[in-house]
Image: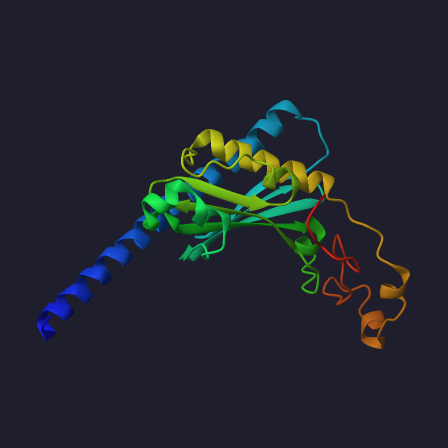
Length: 225
């Protein structure tokens, strides 16, 4: 193979691989828009079914690749990653016949779902922590794989057949809300709260107070049993 042939082959490889990645990202972007629409519908449904409820439920589009769904003391952030990923060779997905038939199907866009306390965002408590509770992976054929905590992680994964449509979006959104409702704010261990700085104390009435609050402060956030 001469120099020109090698260059042409390299150009073809560059085109093919980036086309696959681009198509996967575009499918994920479309799926992200479906999630956004379903979150808005959830808010409308709540207000229609519970018009007198004192619980605040809100949708907010925060930027092009992020929106939030607030319900009571919890808020979910859905974040579309700007890159395309491939599962590592030891991941269970790579052992599927669906992937072995065509390795390009393993390239996916990704949407992360984070759970925060509403007050952490409302009062700009920048030291507070949120938690990744789910990840959605969508490939160029609009098939999806999902992993996450409890209700989200228990969603049946069939990468070869599951398409990211409105029914899948509704299932995932409801699972994320359900998990967050049951993921309570625990009293932190005494030892983790027994020391406080002068600065913390002087700013205790300030909304930007650096005292941390998180659902699992002082506990390990690990796989749910």
